[in-house]
Amino acid sequence: MLNRALKLLRTYHQLSQTELAGRLEISNSYLCEIEKGSKSPGLDLLARYALVFKMPVSNILLFSEEIEEPFGTSERLRISAAKKVLRILEWIDERELVSDNA
Image (cartoon, rainbow, N blue to C red; front, side, top):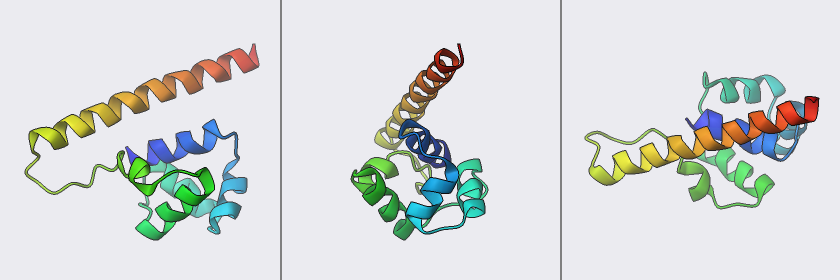
């Protein structure tokens, strides 16, 4: 889920992977792996995301699924809400792409 949120942050700000990788001081291939979900960013990299996008790291961490078991009610609610927010943002992003290509 975190990978989807990070990709949406980039696309919302209309940055290419190459542009964002440069700002984050990482390779383009590493950014691609993060956005695919095959690699997980560390807290230091999330702090750089926060600087680039001018937002608290805690906002980004809302979309992190790595929570210790057992899930409490508040944790399940947080994960459920985060997934719904991501779906809405992805839908908006897709709609904008369709209207831009029309």
